[in-house]
Length: 131
Image (cartoon, rainbow, N blue to C red; front, side, top):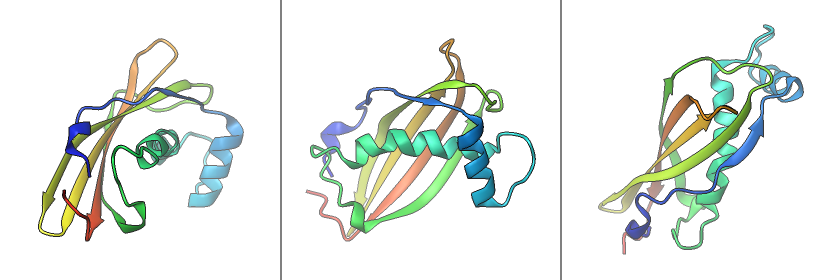
């Protein structure tokens, strides 16, 4: 992967937290409560990650990616009606042997620009070329 992209911030992706989206997610994970599950934060996060995965300058072979780790830093719970902006940044890229680690931070901000949650994903690329 291209280490020159460390620190690259991608354009924010709008993501409204609608009842339909939350209901579909809750059904998929077997949650029947009338709230936004904390893990719903992965939905706008993934929408934003598409920019990194598709960035030809990164030289990421997504077919070799294994999800390594996930962290959440919460400022407040997500709520129905939130109008989120999901903005991701390449926090680090490192290689050791035939493995590469890509760490991506995504900030989910509300309509007022307040940080709701920060996610930190570690993706491991198996058999990658660190050149």
